[in-house]
Image (cartoon, rainbow, N blue to C red):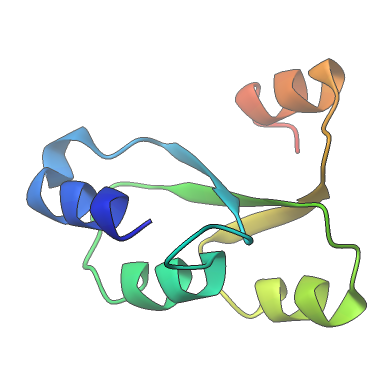
Length: 90
């Protein structure tokens, strides 16, 4: 996650419009990524979807506190969910 964050910071012109973020990652977890990513000034619209195997209500509520997170999805996600995300419907 740290390497990805560094890449995003150094190449802001190529920021994706959608980021799929897993909470359980090695070295940095998704929360650490979000904490650092929200410090970066972003001019273009960007949406983060949290993907997790955790259905812990505390995690779901915590995710809502980040302005860039659009939704918290429990893995695995379906093709129809992915299509809805890409179409801007989820």
